[in-house]
Image (cartoon, rainbow, N blue to C red; front, side, top):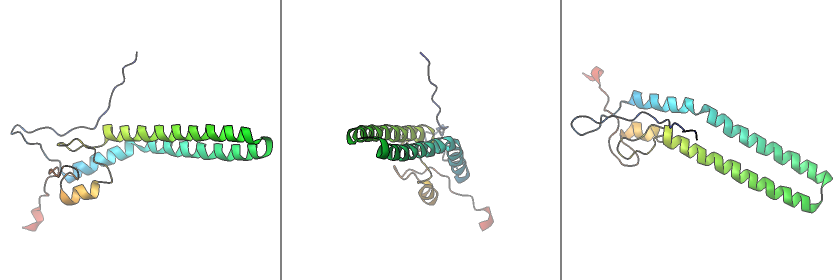
Length: 144
């Protein structure tokens, strides 16, 4: 039996005083950029699944329109429907698992923070799920 290694995003470390070190905005953006660049192959695979499904539909619709009877068309149509459900459903499950394991996480509630939450996290400097502060306040040295 082969043991699979899990890869996860680096977590924030706890401070000796019991709190959690917040990350800076630059660190948060860097983690999201790494997550985005590492998921490119997953995006390409998803596009490939859609293209294959569309090509199969076009092929079978033209082929069976000319060469098959109604029962064969019904059987192949049901088979293609099940195939689509399995491939797209499996892909969605895989994407959700990939996001939960590799996206930067809130140090408090451990929920993944993705590109959809990025504007809200940067604006409020807190997790959109648990409302705990996760980003440091910016140092305004030019304000003085």
